[in-house]
Image (spheres, one colour):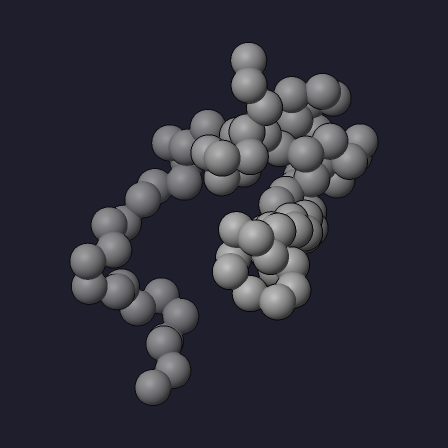
Length: 81
C-alpha cells in the first residue's frame, strides 16, 4: 500500500526541521552531501570461503570538495583522532 504524502506514520516522531542544525563539511563547510560507495575486501581466510568477499558500504562525500563525511561513516571506518 502506498503512503499518502503528509500522512503520519505510527512510531515515527514528528520532527520540526526548523529546530534542526545543518551539518557541514569539516574541510570546506559545504552543506550538500552526495551518496557514494566504498568497497571493502575481506580475506577468504577470514570469511572461510574460496574467494575474498567484497562488501559495499554506502558513504557520503561533500558535494563541493569531495571530502568523506566522517561523522556519517560506520563506527568501524571512522578516522582515529
